[in-house]
View 1 (cartoon, rainbow, N blue to C red):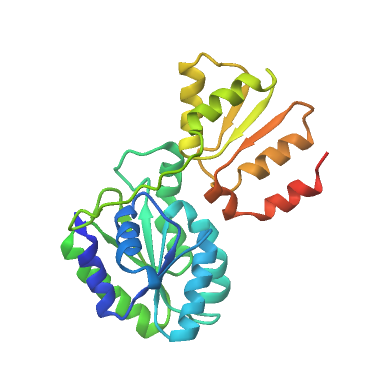
View 2: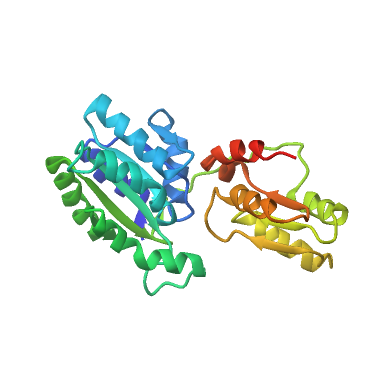
Length: 275
């Protein structure tokens, strides 16, 4: 286990004070800490490619490395700006990628994470990105050395962190915001009771799909066929559009705000095909 505070000490010594990225369960402790103590120098991005671009802009303005955090599932989104702008052979813009490594070797995880986890290091090598794996306190020395190399050679470097490795030294209380919206469960129950029997539901990744499956089972609402987006966050609407173009049945897309924001251009495509 590694404390977030100790990790940040290494970054601070290397003059890394700006953070941007997409929240990730593996790096949850980091996000909680930044939200509490570093709001002025922390910018959440809508997707990983945008986070890299924000990191590039930070370097252009300050000549200091940014820390760009993400889950390895979002590495594909980040590849374009990493290779076509930040790469050593293009503009040579250094930054530190802090990557939550789902599906790491020898760790049990969901199928979609196991597939991406297996090729994560290969993607970094193909992209000419030097990286280190941080599992315990002594590995922070490797990270410190890697950051110095990235700074000196003006190149992108990465740090891979497995699940349940990063923790907060002191417990930070999270204030829960109360609202008057209906619960997702109640919404799903009413939706399933009111839609056509042969409707097709495309359900976004995460809690929405899990709860949809749970509600169908517990409330005996096993009508219709659902497609659960276990991965590909941000692409639910596009899948629904593709299906609707070739189907006469009612197509329903259940998406989340974060997912929709990731690739909001799909809203334009959807609007073009309105009936």
